[in-house]
Image 1: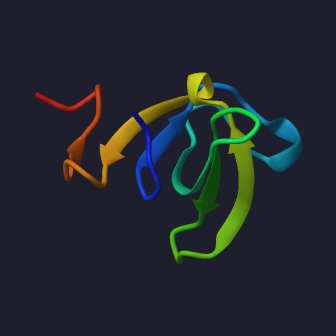
Image 2: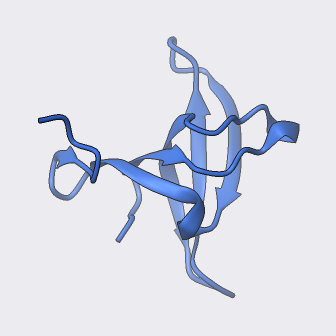
Length: 77
């Protein structure tokens, strides 16, 4: 399960926001009503916010878990 401060990778592009498939961002808020969704922030190398968008769980892949302090499903061997 995803939670706030997890790092995620986008599986669905949002061209109007400049977010491509594979872009990585940080969950800054987990929404539960009316259904589960996540507000994800995307930043540049200096930490400046480029975009914040809401995604459905199926549109995200966990890269790093704040709770486990480890990489998600695609952890390098």
